[in-house]
Length: 230
Image (cartoon, rainbow, N blue to C red; front, side, top):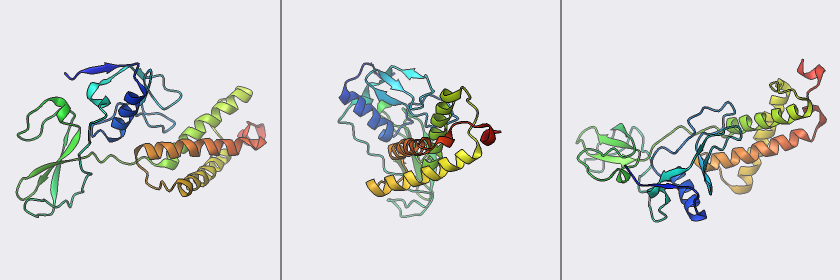
């Protein structure tokens, strides 16, 4: 068992926890839910504990592994090198991949669980040399994530307007898609953040959704009307 730390956390600890969520080499803490909005289930550290970024999710967690708050912790796992990885020992091209969960030692390794992050163990096809690489999860689609967030927010606004929480009609969904594409492109041009990974994807999606909803609510036809919704 590893030592745990419990909230409340200092700003330095919050920053370290969120950095570990992005770069820690082990599966991040999640709420365990698959949100209909498309929102990521990866928890965000706050002073009072972990929260889910989906505003409709009520999951909370007040503890973390103590080593996750160590500012001096360095992440040394290299990125996943693909099926055609080259062995640094014999030069052969091609390696097998084995998933290793957090705390699971590799071949011939010993140590405390915190020494073994969640990772991919690679093994040369010719000489059996082994090495570790970072996980290679699929990248969430930023536009799809933003669309889910924007639909949830716009539906809630319409429901507050007339008590109708019905799904958005297709003409509004199409307007949202177009607005999100415009917002995503504008944000990337402004910041030069073109890669879709981890926190970058979440930040772009959040801002794109907010901008798209703001653009649509500037027009009166976003509210439910019998001739549009029926």
